[in-house]
Image (cartoon, rainbow, N blue to C red; front, side, top):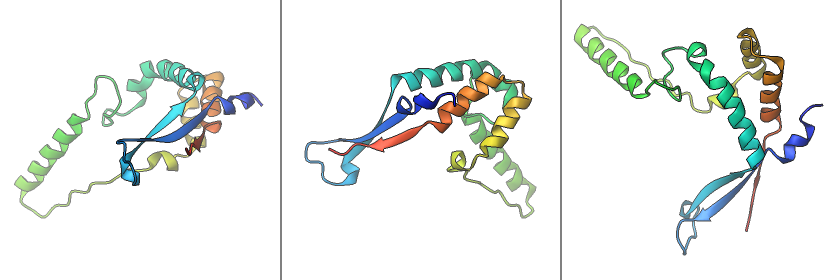
Length: 142
């Protein structure tokens, strides 16, 4: 299997750094994740290859983390929609959905099939699969 030895390079070490000298409670510490340089470079190369295609792959309604798009645009859209609904006078409902933990619910086979349909090459998809499947985290104590 390709990428088998990558597990040891794609490991994050989680540690807690004290915010002050007399740190006692959990809130007195700052978590920091130490990731191997090879995994960071590998992920950066993949992201740089993907970046030029993001604007054509992602809907114009999605603004976060896309170059030349602003998350603030969503705020303006919501504010304008709220004003319009208020002006209409009739009872209306505005629904806000929280997509927290969306990463944990992604169907990876579906995502890979979508990327395959957008003509991403076999090797590119295999590299992403290796990066995702080999990731692990260990917590450092003391």
